[in-house]
Figure (cartoon, rainbow, N blue to C red):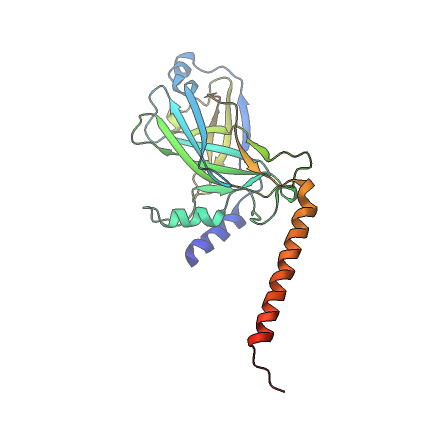
Length: 259
C-alpha cells in the first residue's frame, strides 16, 4: 500500500499541467493511395453510459471500430469532467493494486490533485487521460470504466429535488505503429501525449473524429430544499438538546458522586 501511495504522489508531481500538445495539423498533400489504406481511422464509434445509482457511479465507454485495427494499437480518451463530480485517486490506486497486473500505478492520469471533500461550488472541472484496453470478446473494440463520484451541491431555492450534471464527450486519440499512422495525410490532427499511464514520455497520437450515439451523459444528483432550512435546523437543535438532557438525567440518577 505504501508503494502504491508513493507511486501516486510521484505521478502527480511529474504530471505536466497540460496533458496533450497539439503539434500541428497537416495540410500538405499525402499519397492518396496510402491515405485510403487508413480508412479504419474514420470508422470509430463511441458508446457511453453511466451505471449504478446515487452519488457513486461508473462511466463506461465502449470504443468500436468497424474496420480492422492494426495489432498493437492504443486508444486514449481525454476526459474533461465538470466540477459537479470527482475521481478518487486512492480508489484508482486500490483498484489497480488488486488487479492482475504487477504495476501499482493507475491507468488514469489526472491533471491535478483532487480535493475529495470540497463541494461542487468550491471546486473546478479537471481533465483526465483514460487509457482504454482491448475487449477480448469483440474485434476492434476497446473499453474503459472510470469511477466517478458526485459532489455535494447547494440546496435549491426553487423546490427542485435534483441537480443535473452533464459529462461532455471526450476527445479520442489513437496510437499505432508509425508505419500505420497516416501522419502525411491531410486533415489529420497530430497530438503528443504520454505514451502510457506509467511512461510519461510523449508519443505521437492522432485525434480521431468519431460518431457518438448520445451527445452527452448526465446524472441526476439529489439536492436539499432551501425552504426547509429553518425547519431542519430547528428540529436538529431540538433533538440534540433533548438527547443531552436525557444523558445528563441518567448520569445524575445513576452516577456515583464523591463529596
